[in-house]
Structure formats: C-alpha cells, structure tokens
Amino acid sequence: MVILVFVESAEGKIKNTSMEAVAYAHAMGGDVTAIALGAVEKVELESLGKYGAKKVLHAADEKLNQDIIQVYAAVLEQALQAEGADTLVLANSSLGTPVAARVATKIGASLASNVVELPDTSSGFVVKQSIYTGKAFALVSLKNQKKVIAIRKNAVGIKDVGSPAQITPFTASLADADFATKIISTEKATGEVLLPEADIVVSGGRGMKGPEHWGILEDLAKALNAATGCSKPVSDLGWRPHHEHVGQTGVKVAPQLYIAVGISGAIQHLAGVNSSKYIVVINKDPEAPFFKAADYGIVGDAFEIIPKLTEAIKAAK
Amino acid sequence: MKILVCISHVPDTTSKINFADNNTKFDINGVQFIIGPYDDYALARAIELKETTGATVTVLNVGLSDTEPTLRKALAIGADDAVRINAEPLDSYFVAFQIADYSKSIGYDVILMGRESIDYNGGVVHSIVGELLGIPSVSPVMKLDIDGNKAKLAREIEGGKEFIEVNLPFVAGCQEPIAEWKIPNMRGIMSARTKPLTVVEPKPVDSGVALQRFELPPPKGSVRMIKADNVPELVNLLKNEAKIL
Image 1 (cartoon, one colour):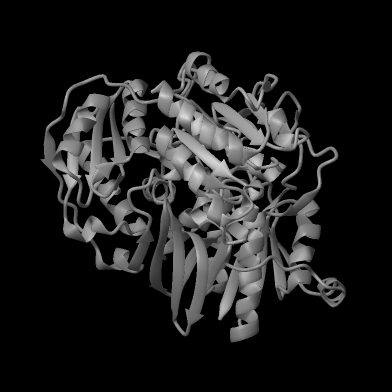
Image 2: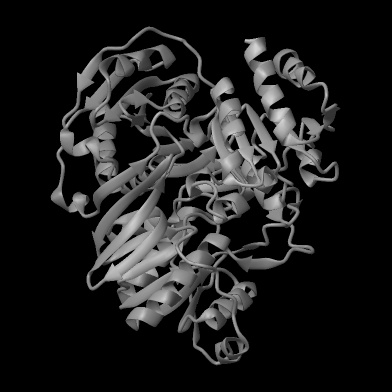
C-alpha cells in the first residue's frame, strides 16, 4: 500500500504539522511518499525521510509558489495516480483541509478531517474525528478503497524513524482553469511561531487591560518558544490581529501547553482550547470559570506573576 | 445577482453535548438550536450585498422539518426565500452533494456558507460544492466585496491573510469579521412568515463514510492551585509532573 502525504511549507521550511502527517502515514504501515509543492529548501525535503517517507516528490514549478487550492488539488490527484496511491494524508489547515475536500471529490474517496488518532483497522477502517468543537468525538468508518485523511495536531506526534530521503522531481500538468482564483497579495507575520503549529501557546484576555501590556506575554512566549493568542474580546477590540483569536469562532489549538492570562474562560473560548494537553490559568478572579478547565492555576495579578514566570522558566532551562 | 446562503442548524455554542441510543444519536434534550455562527456571518454579508447591489438571497438548509424555524429566522434577517432539502445531514459529502445538485438547477452567482458547521466541524462542504460544480472555492473568507462580475476576498491563513480576486460564480466559506451578525426586527419576523419556503426531496448518494458511534472525552481532573508568591513551583510542576519544559 502506498500512502501519499501532502506536506506544506512556510518560508521554505516544512511545517511541523506536515512532519506529523508523514509520521502518521508511516505509523499506518504503508510505503510513504511525501510530496511538496513550490519552493522548499532541499535539506528540508530530505529530512522528511526521518519521519518515515521512503520517497519525496518535489513539484518545483514556480507557478506552484502560490498555494491556490484548485491547483494544488489537481497536482495531488496526478501524484496519487502516478504513485498508485489509494490514500492521501495531510494536516488540517487553511490550505490542507480545502485541498483534501477537493481531492477526495475528484477521486471518489472517503473523506475524514479533524482526525485525532491512528485508524482502527481491526474491523474495517475506523477513524476518530473531533466534533462539536472538541466537546466530543465521532468514530466513522471509511468504506471506500480510496481515502483522504486530514489529521489534527498531536494525532500521533513526530518521531524519528528513518534517514534522509532522496528527492524525485515531479512534473504536473497545470490547467489554466485551475488558476481562476488569483492571489493578489499576502500579509503575513514573519519569524513568529504560528499559532496552529505551536507546542506551547500563551494567550491574553481583557484582564491584560490593553494592547500596550502585551510585551510581558511576548517575553513569556519567547522564553517558551510559544505562539501568542488572545480571547475574542481582545481581537474584537483590535488589541491583537484576528488570526490570534483562539476560540469557537477563531483558531482551535491543540498544543502541549496552553497558558491563559486574564481570560475568564467563556465556553466559546474553552471550545478552542479543550484539545490542549495541559492548561495553566492565571487570573485575579478566583471564581473565573476557566479554573474548572485548568490543570494548574494561580490566582493573582498577571502583571506581577508573568515576569516572575518568565524569569523562572529562563532559570529552569 | 443570485446569492445562495447555506446554513446549518446546530446546537447553541453553550450547549452541553450528550448522546442517546447507545451513543449513536445526538441528544436534543434541553438543547437550543441556532443558525451556525459562521453561516450567520455569511448570511449577514449576503444581506448587506442585497442592500448595496440589489441581489436576491436564497437561504438553504439540508435538514428535516424541525429545522424550519431556523430557516424562518434567516428569512426574518432578510433572505428572500428559503429551500429545505428534506434529509438528515448525515455527512459532509452528502450535504455538499445536495447543495450542488440543487444549485445547478438554479445557477447561483455566489454561494456562501460558514467556514465549517459547529457540530461536525468538517470545514469541507464549501470545497466539495466547488469541486462538484467545477467552480472556485475559497475559505475561510473574512472579507468579501463584489464589483460586477469580479469579487475581491481576503482569506485568513496561518499567521496572516491572503488577498484574492476571483470571477463569479464561486463558493466561499465565511468567518468573522466579514460582517456583523444581524438580529431580526419585528417587521422582518412578520414578513418571514409569508416568504416562500420550498421543500425539495434529496437525491440518493453514497458518500463512502458511515458513523459507528460518538464518544465523549474523559472528564477533566481537578485543578491544582499554586500560590501567587510561589511561581517557581508552577515551573517545577510543568517540568517534572507534566514533563513539558
């Protein structure tokens, strides 16, 4: 069985979530072929072998430097056919999920997104999907021979299992019609840890009292190599950009550690963080509902606690 | 211009989730149903476009008759007519297939919906509809302007946004801040009662997936409180107990 894995990159580097998609396909027990589109560093591509890719395809056509959903779906369909692969695995993302949907529709595959662990193949092929914004799971049988699986962060974790792989160029035929959506420009934070990719997230709420106080959270995030997030009121007030809003109608995160500072813990916010492995809540109100969802809590003034926490973390390293 | 807005009928965001029938059915006891929050953004933007361009707005739901109050609410917000495809929305492909099949018979210029429903969270229906109709799909869209035959959109990506141009027709999965949610006024509620609501029978289709059962996550253990004057203890616990740092 050949499994194709679509790997995403940012600024030439493979995304962590895509490395995990390779590890997931390897753990499924097939021959894993990874494919990257557009400009990616060679050593990054080779490194996919370490996570279990036997073969790495690189479609380096410069027309693929822009990640247009239809174009990517068309290239992946061709790669599946060329490799004789029945299954496509990728990471859930703003690009991966729509691409998964279009590929599955093209090839008539059973489709599952938000998959949180390896499939159960003891009877058929059953995947576990996160539903109700992390409040429940659905066990769903994928009946077709062809399958497209989009996994959530921390579905299997990343393990080193192999050695660097050879890169094979892949040439796809690109149809003009697929370029109907034109990307005019992109606005992107650079050099930051991306929220959906981060193992640790430091989030601030209205208790931070204003955007001018974010510096102490950014210092803490830097000490932890974490991404920064925020609650919905904070992004609604324009204190932080919308892509940092964590919650029901914002980004859903699944980090190892989520640190919430000055966030009361409305149910809509909890919906975005309930897949976190550990939750730390720092709030001056001992009645804040977030404490009920936390593993560790501190009641107190964030402006005193956060700098101390940053120091203690630096000291512990 | 004809705009189709597809809405989901989902439990309120504050609902406690329980299952019935041996964990094979959602337990609707005590649950309030609403227009999916993301779909509500799509609807709000469609109504704004109706006001500025004179477009017509049709609202569609795939669901059984219990979803009609949700469709009526969308009519009260300002949609011109409603369509209910009379079937349980079993999975993403099934729902997308019904939407694509119905919209083919009318020929919509713009198809809007939420980036995902908040029950199954698949985030794929818009893309499947686009693929089935052979037209572009863009998601998640946080800004949408239409000028003649051309649309300008902003799509949220990890760490930022992408500005996109696309010709009509297209499908978009929407999210905030594309528009402010609209609350129906009394005139809207009154007029919604007499606006047309058409019921269409679904087409059979095999989507290749079958639900086995639902599961709830294990209950959360109790929180461990640390004194505000003992911050290093938190670091110690994260390092030695949680084994994170």
